[in-house]
Amino acid sequence: MNKLILSTAALALSAGFAVAQDVVRMGTEGAYPPYNFINDNGEVDGFERELGDELCTRAELTCEWVTNDWDSIIPNLTSGNYDTIIAGMSITEERDEVIDFTEAYFPPDPSVYVAMAEDVDVAGGVVAAQTGTIQASHVASTGATLVEFATPDETVAAVRNGEVDAVLADKAFLEPIANEDADLMIIGDDVMLGSGIGIGLRESDAELKATFDTAIQSMKADGSLNTLIEKWFEGMTGPY
Image (cartoon, rainbow, N blue to C red; front, side, top):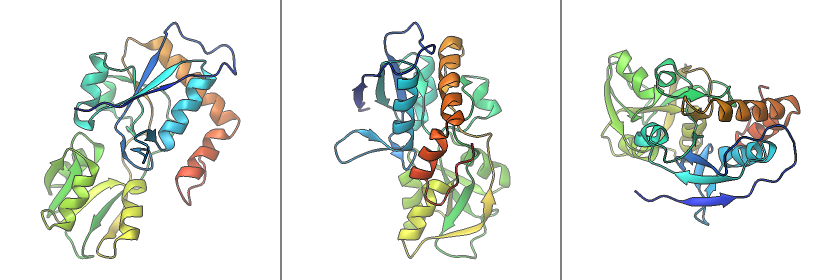
């Protein structure tokens, strides 16, 4: 597995957030725009890159960015390969039994089904979802036949090539794809899952969690988190 490590020196702009740790390694997937992706320069980019850099600045932390495949992103956090997960990860009770989360930096994002025909039976058909996501768990609970893929792009490709009837994923990810492809369409109503998106951390890192919670709260208080959300998610009004 290839890993991209990018060093970001945090600026000391605010006091009181510092944690006793030389470098905080920020783990992300780099494959789920607009939350996170790899840009043309080979660098981690997107909403969460900009958010993470600002949080580290406010917390007076030196942070490095590390990419990791989604299906092993929690095990590699708990084993110490990096210190946080900032990768569009929804806060769920199941995940919270294994890792800890900061307070949400993004509200629950609607999920949607995308298919190539409006009359697809998503409850009784074959539906793709990315492995280890809340969407995969939801599809399995509906009685549909779930087909899991390692990456979000593979789930969409499976719809295009007829391997599955539909895909379920975050609306922020699927809507731009459906808008740009005349063969794809959103079907049915939004599906609300999860309790918002937060930074995942090891349960033993209570001090680091408190540090990021304080930084997130400061961005909510001054409106900068809303500004960042509105920048990256077209048509969305900042919820904080």
